[in-house]
Length: 119
Image (cartoon, rainbow, N blue to C red; front, top):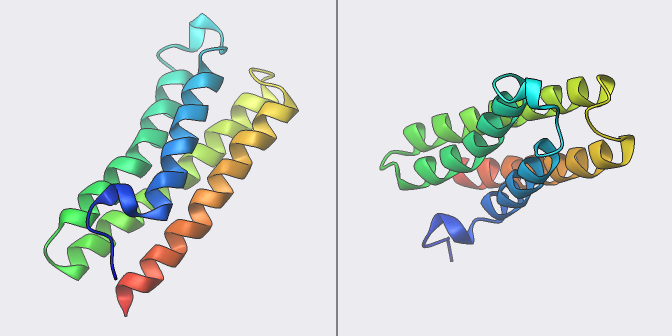
């Protein structure tokens, strides 16, 4: 049986945990980055969950898949900004690894969700 709400989608649940971790992580970024990397990283992370939710409610499978693909792209953006933040020493290697691991988990689940929706 399929999901009845976006909350039930495992990919959304994993992405939501990634968003929470992103907000915790970016709270420690330099204040000079509030309109830079902090904002970019938070918007990209939130975009993953929002696009999964929006795709879930779309009436046509083609539209749904478009939003799920946007979520995948936003997830890649998160990974890129995380790497930049780590290399600028805005977060420790440990915190980067934790956040990156959450991204990888969300990505695998999102990929699986997309595959399941294509059939």
